[in-house]
Image: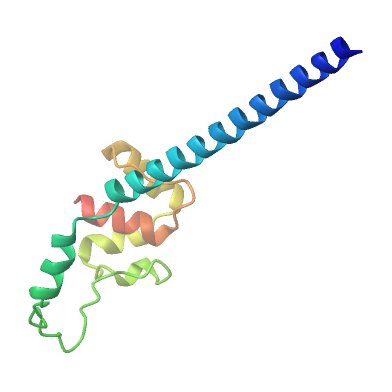
Length: 133
């Protein structure tokens, strides 16, 4: 029986040693993690001189002079919904063009090599011919 008690005591001693080693490793790991956290905090934070410089020399914003505002904005856009005949006044040559049909105006534009859309109205075709001449 003494041999049996000896083996149990030896196993209890081995378990005790392993428990102490595990506790020591846990303590070392905790110390290491604290040191790494402190190091990352030091590396990522700006230097103290940065905060002192900001306190000693406040930045003043310069005000830019305000530009003078025009009385009324100039609107030089042309409405696409207005009648296109009003854009250019009718002249002597335009009287002949105004009497022609849309298909004849398209033939004239094609002969002159002026691009146009098939959906263009008569006024648009007249204005294209006036602008080209």
